[in-house]
Length: 436
Ligand code: SAH
Ligand code: F3S
Image 1: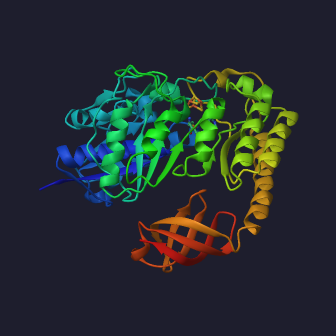
Image 2: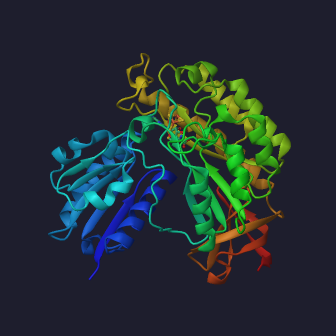
Image 3: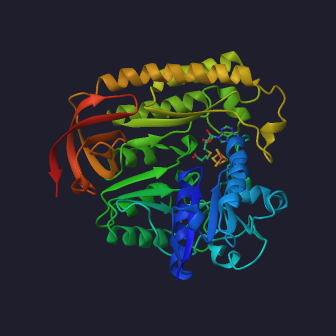
């Protein structure tokens, strides 16, 4: 009889991929099958995020709940970034937790499940060449890691302290994984790393020089790869060579994530982001000029220590000028192990909340303006999800969510869709051609 695994994933795409790795290892080597009924599980895992304070609170309320509803002998494991930075403290605070496995130690999952009270959170551990067993939650889109860790020192960010130093995965291993994903039916490859366009900075077992632009070319040459996306690039490393490859390579989807964080050059300096407002605008304008249909998404933090009204207006100014199609906006959250938490002039919660609302309202206006222009346009969409009400949903090349009436038959297929209805977050339309 197989054992049952229940897994909950918080946080970013890298966590989603780490969870797939955990599931792959446990289902192929340890006789587990997945369940979505927590009461039925023999092993309950939560894969955590620590980038802001909220998800950390969520961890303790979640595992408290797991402990109440679980089967008598079921084990609870805590993985991911909060596991990395709290380590043993988790077991002290929640003694019913059986193991703690850091975000850089995922390949040890097969060991820790057999030990009691095991804590594996070594930040120097190198799993950049580990061959994980295969598991993918989507049939058509495949996440492929290209690096582990992050070498930047953004003063607000805890990630380098939870995922450790940046090591790139050798290109031959990446290409092998891309080929395997395509053989299993993937049409879209999503390359993952904390700072993807810094690729090639350091390998632990590969001695040729290769950068992200070259890697993109290599991936696009793999037969069967129809679309490539990547997350997340860093604006500092958006040199001309990279932007030009992005623009001219037809397999690369025309949707770029450019995490701005702040539009004020002074705040950017305090954040140690390495670029200025002018550099960011220059890169964004170059993209818009080269690719008229490009979508640009971003991450913005409001209320970073020392952010004045004038600094915040610089952020609004960049938003007005770039007209981002998507913004992930956050109030600054002081994090342990980061320099910014000790900076003077912390901004009050009231001011930060007020700025967040202003930013979001401005963005709604921009979205209304953008979506008005979408009716009547035709997008090539890769459908990958069934929705309620007889709808199927997918993404356009430039990352619009597009829905249409349809059934399973459309899943995994590309189709041209003529847009009939547009909203702030998604479009609806009619299929005019299905590509077989
Ligand atoms: N390199 C990763 C960054 C991971 S954190 C990437 O580019 O995706 C994801 C986002 O969370 C960051 O871009 C930032 O906008 C936000 N973030 C990170 N630390 C934060 C903090 N202390 N407070 C608020 N938001 C934060
Ligand atoms: Fe964090 Fe900056 Fe790296 S936001 S993940 S330290 S690029």
